[in-house]
Length: 153
Image (cartoon, rainbow, N blue to C red; front, side, top):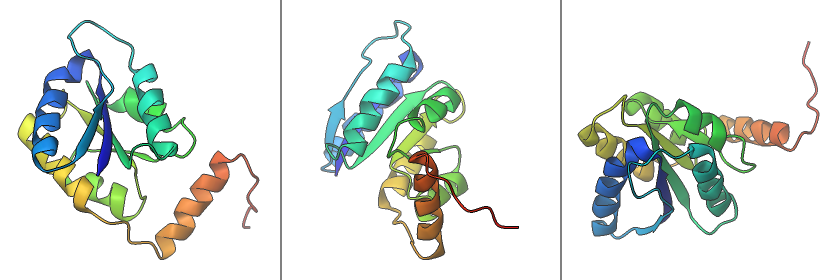
C-alpha cells in the first residue's frame, strides 16, 4: 500500500518508528516531514498528506501529532478526506468499518508507541463494510461538495 505519512514536532519519533515497521511489511512510504523536534504548524502537513490521498498519489495517509485533535480537524477540511482518530481499537476499527477513513490520526500524548503500532495495523487491515454505511459516507461527501440535502421531518 502507498502511505503518505507526516508528523509535527511531537510525533517525529513515533513517525520514524511507524515508517520502519511499515516499510519492513512492504508498504511504500512517502515521508512528508517533519524531521526534527523543532516546532512546526501541523495544518500544512495535513493539507499535504490530504492532497496526496485525495488525489490518488497515496492509498492512505497517517498523521502523528500531540493529541491528534487539531490534525483531525485540519485533515477533515481537505475535500475527499475522511480522517479518523486512533485512540483505541474500537474507534480505529469503526473509522474504517463504518466511515471508510482514508487518513489515520495518532496522538503521541494520548497513546504509547506499542498501541500506535497495533492501531495502525488494525486500521490498515480493516476493510470498509459498505451497505448502509456507504449511504452515510455518500451523504458526508454530499455535505462536503456543499450540496443541499433534503431535511426529513
